[in-house]
Length: 318
Image 1: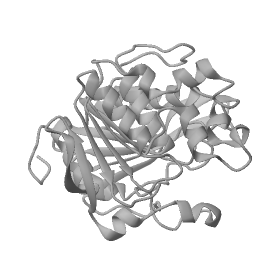
Image 2: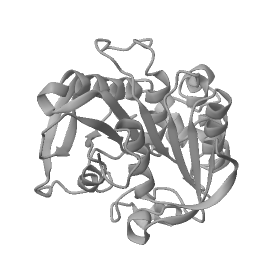
Image 3: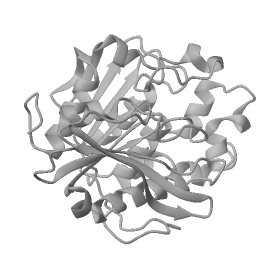
């Protein structure tokens, strides 16, 4: 996604500093409806990249999501694993939530309606942010003023059991070269306690907000069983959760096209969902525990966010 001028009905506030770290300031880009006649919900987008690459420009068309939902969307940076080990990334996301809630009046946001949305590594962090939002402070957290909770989580193909992801994906160079090892400072098998804290499954409680999870059935980088584990754990805790298993899709389908390193392109579907539109999928939810055939696309993410942030169930923002 470029930093070209957004459409006139969308206002852009790029490069807002939301936290200061030894490695440098952390920035977010805020997109919001230009009308500004009433406070609007805000959704934090968290980019992928294996926690070691990517930035806040690695995002789908966020101006389009603003127009579709009537919500503001903030594309958020977090420290990469070359700058700091986990849990720094989760702390950064929680800082961004607190920042947007504290500045809600300045930017026309509704502090009662905040969601996180992420893909891959960003999906992992979105899940963790949602599952820890009821906790005022986490061990070692620098910024603890303000409310870090969110009202909904949308996440796609995020790892939930880091040791299992490494075992299943057989990364080139072995476990020590995996993105998970870079995040933890060593293979998950050798950093068992930290890996447990980095697993969303560890944090599932009935206090969690509603989740929408999506995952491609042909994903070999993070296998769809990861999302099934999270959905099942949420359902067992009584948390509203819907899981879309997108038929034949690989990793990265929420990403924009044209950003890939060619060496991993064959394992990715960057740009495919935006290019092809809604894809065949199986949906599992409390009203369809065994799964039902349907489709999945950006409209389903929009509808989930509208439903839980605005109360609107129509096809248009309220």
